[in-house]
Image (cartoon, rainbow, N blue to C red):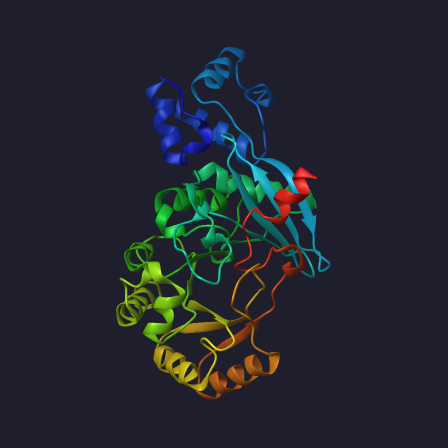
Length: 347
């Protein structure tokens, strides 16, 4: 029986190798070859005996993520359509900034089951969850293409990370591991739609990963209509969980809020957001809604976002307006759907 290596966490690799009678150092050695040195085959692992390479190739086959399409935005952002070992496709985005900063927006699932009404990914439905190595591959693909070290990762691409909790956390630990990618825990952000049990569990993880929550409305009826799959965890329960999270971790939570014309951007919704944030250790990211084909939703004028920023500041709520990157290639928040990249790949 074979098990593709990239389906396994670091602990699982160690246990699987031990079950084959291999010493512990071999698992660390192979993980370093795959995730730090980007080996695509066991044949490249020249400090392993040939017999061992043959054994591992048979028992733990390697499947790389292949770039089948790439688009470059006018702002330098790059979006990639990746083909995984079983033919599944998924999108990831590389976002360069001034200086040495390079951020990867990473997908945790191919498609998404959350069905958020303003999100292109949600219209796809869920194909499958990704394995740990498939998340890490996205980071390595982007770093190799830019020829730079990835400094920041946001799990904000396709999928709901807490619906794929174990694989996602295993991937974050690979990214954070100093012997592998060595990305600081505080430079790794996981974004959830607000799955309360996942937030509870995340609060007890030892690493200082950053938590972001897609809020998008602090009025229950509005949030339920925008994000129907999290309606079973109402806003009071979400807020109580976030209070416990901040007490447990001592870390501030980011609240993502996409302003949508005629839906969640009036004074009633602003007052509700201020009430939700009052006394909570949080930071609000206001997002100008990005265009999604055939969507009935539209962004507000920039002046509305600026008015909200001033009102939040006056109320003592830390807030910034997020600058969307890559929207001209459908690579910004809520736009990932394997669409434009697929059309380019087929052309």
